[in-house]
Image (cartoon, rainbow, N blue to C red; front, side, top):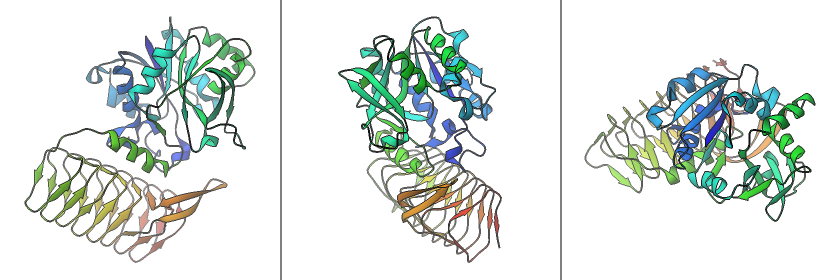
Length: 399
């Protein structure tokens, strides 16, 4: 069986973290999101993958190449038009020339456990989709069932219909492309509309799975997704750990990293390669750090995603935050965390227990404080002794 992974999307709602990389390449527990999808497929014996790419496709292709290092064979298909405007059905249609039998279609921007794929493979019959329960169904395609047959699927309903949602993981036969063509002729380009069009014509099986499936729709969702992935992560402790370092629970430390004396790390925590931590640094649960991260003395990090090549100055406090590649934070950078109203576009979102979100290659000088829910765009420059509130656009300068 082949699988098509839809990885062409830009992920505009996840800005500033998709300025130079597609959503599927955002690191979760130090691995790109789409890598979890590839692993879930391989653990179910699926080796032939067609990957539909588009926005910043080079980041995906350079990571996976031909797939051999991941025990798969990858064929890339480029979608030249934006998925955001044309939708998932259009993206899937790009793969039709590589499909000649029953296949899986999988969104590349969710962290997926192998159990989700195995549930679909083992229980599928005809057109089938994997379904899971959600506490926030209004962000997804909401499904109603009669037994195990899908009776309705509604994209992002305003009112609560059900707590069952589509995971975006399907089993299709090649004739699905005929249904896609028909819908696209009516200017409908998403797979939710395709499934809805099939319901009166044939049984569409809904398979409820209890396997882990988590999705990041907005930037703050990355914290929850990262915490879920860390709960399942496995790794090894390498590098150098000096005397008087305390490490408890699951902690993974990459090669070439140094944990200096007096530091305290309480897992689950992942620290990448070539990092330097401490001395006298505290790292608390649900924190991941990429490669070449420097945390200077007397700083505390908790429940945060710190990407690669980040430097955090001494006596800093960072909680419930996401910090992108190449960020430089000066001495005594302090993050407030709590509930906040965050504006994205023309809509406000009530977000619980959030710190700050910082885009790539931003420079923050000494003694800066960030309010809960503040967003600092990519490549910004923040002068010393400033208080950050609200949002700062990409390349913003605060003097």
